[in-house]
Length: 77
Image (cartoon, rainbow, N blue to C red; front, side, top):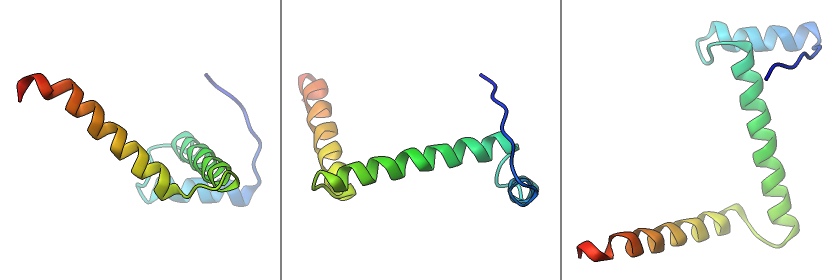
């Protein structure tokens, strides 16, 4: 899906510098990464508002992954 945005010349220079340095292939990739980072920050803020730290989520996710792996592969043990 395409969208159109207007940015200041300074922001455009910043996007282009990331592409020139080879960190991203296009301006769009830089913008997508910025949006993903904004989503991540919002999630961290929401966790903090509910008394959690990012490490808590990592620990829970790792524990759930271990449990799912064990359930899936216990038949091979």
